[in-house]
Length: 311
View 1 (cartoon, helix red, strand yellow):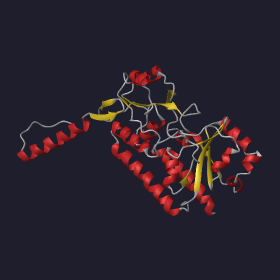
View 2 (view 1 turned 90 degrees about the vertical axis):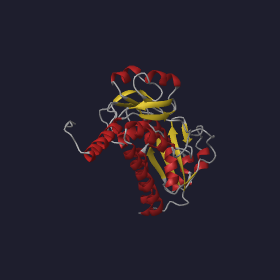
View 3 (view 1 turned 45 degrees about the horizontal axis):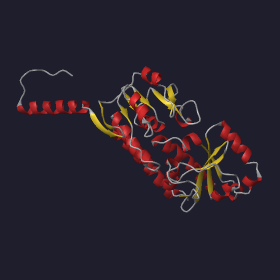
View 4 (view 1 turned 60 degrees about the vertical axis):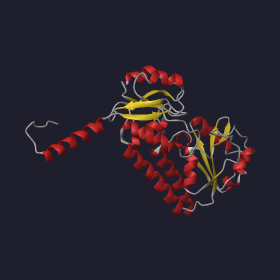
């Protein structure tokens, strides 16, 4: 923007000073409090790399399309619910094994990482661009909200992120009021080739189940601070024989194992199986993802499961 140097009135001068101050303020760096201390980020970064599924989700919810991401658990690309949003996104490793050369090749101006990023990994990737790592809150149903807010602030899109979080909260409350879920017991189980794992009640998706009115239980099978139980036998699965059972699988191996288990007498004896209230869900979404877009997708599944009861 060009400004004339002609003489101005005091009022015009004051207005011009205000405009300049606002323009300067919008470009000023933000100092973010992260797990690795203060990190400075300028403006609205355009070459963003995400090293965490929740960070990719948050960026997309904020209206920013990252250049690269890590593969979802049990897969080789992003989680299925995001496929259509980032069909050509580059892969730069997995959550456990990052490809530093692939990250550097993106020439990032901001890296959004997981709260579980190791100190060694941080020391390497933070040399490439400002790297934002949220403080770990452990396993808490609402921890994703604080992570998302930090990513939104780093991206320069805090307002958009806050609106996305509020939309999730509003929809969950509406579903709890509209659908008959109050007092309905439920559990989330992830089926793996080695057997079923009961998921903690303190996770992202189980928190959404609670927010929509469910009484969520892990039958005290999950140790404190752990995301899931040890693998159970089919007989012990009866401990989570709830009104509604959400059954997640991560990949084809898990789906094949679940299909085989459903043919067994032990599975058939479950009351929830007799009532045909075992609800299959995407484990990449329900047990690995987080963020506003993932929350809306989980709420879609919950609404569909409860709506089918009304028909």
